[in-house]
Length: 587
Picture 1 (spheres, rainbow, N blue to C red):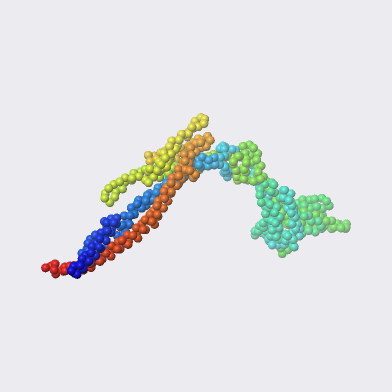
Picture 2 (picture 1 turned 135 degrees about the vertical axis):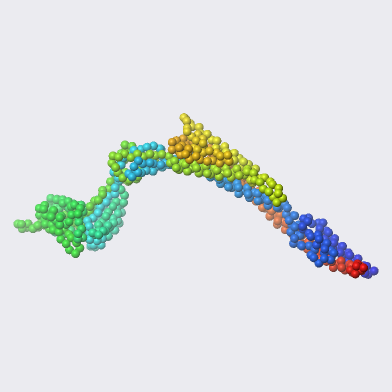
């Protein structure tokens, strides 16, 4: 009886374990792959193989529970694709809208101007956008010049200058006197240049050196008579004067020397290339009561003028010379440019003349007095052509992206089933409306306020529509319209009051592109909100329900596995209690 009771107890344990497994199997929603039934049965009959793969079982069960989430993720993927596609279409449409703005503004490509000169060597010009087209006649009589002076030659830039002074006077009346010679501001040519530049007289002094020696060159900072200047030296009065040394072999420049004796001035003119010896001969030949002689020393040649001693005795008379130190020669006088524009005389301090023709800036390059030069102001065909071709390119990009959403695409799955689908935005109202708007824009017909026009449609500009909705440009037709009828082209795009093709199309597209309340903004905001809502829903589902299920299922399947692992031992004990043995069974 005891053995029978023990056997019943063991049988109860086994039934309890089987019941636990059956309860788990019946209470858990899984796919067939979640639990390996053959393993369970093998374990029940004494097999040593595992009963349940807990990890795989839990994963399979969670997969089944995740069915709603997979739908949400798929929806979110679709929303992302829609957002990406719509953003691309938005960018392309905004480019077309920008093209329309460019072609609609009075300062855009249609207002660009070129100026053609019949003599570009003597005159060139530029015109501001919007300048009235037309032809003008210009005659350049003389160019504006900058005042320029240069000194007599010195042995070097660092040789000490004779003691004297020079005065610079500008056309505006400003003056500056600079002392020269040892211990003064103008000790050498280099020092003198520095001293002059420090006066801020609107002139620039530089030392120019070559194989013969050095000179001081002074030039106005700007052209015109108002920027001109003059240079004078203090007069010397005495009975003996010696000029500064001139390098051996050097010659004088074109200049004048004035000697005043007994109140009577006498001017001696020197010519370029003349020597001190030749100048001395010229002075002595005038019988002025002075003796001039050319001399030399270690620094070069010089000129000495000495008063003659009176024959009857008495004091030696003095003389005055206007260039006691070194002379300056005026190379160029500052002068204004002189020209006529359409017969109107123009005087300009600069060779860049603005205002003679409204919106046009003239650049005077040369002067051929009396020779008329023709200037033609016209629309800049190349700039306009570029803008129109850019519109065609951008339009084709936009319409291509839109049309691709409605194109049928076929795909075949692993089972051989073929399905046909369209783009992710095929049913989007914004894209459907945009396609219609872009197509309708091409049918615009310009109506001139008065008279007729040669450009009333895009076709008149050589722009045609292909079967796929894209545009193409016949460059010959376009160039002909821009060359022969630029005003009609401008009127087509701008209209009589910025109400032409460009503005009409821009206003239609602005319903989509407006950053405030355009269809793109509204549509993309809606997609973003839906995507954010799905993200929150997925996160709540994962962090709430799925995480809890993961814990519960892991515990349940682990308990079932333990129970199954105990079945073989319990079956063996039951067989032993009941007296069942392998040998007995075999008998």
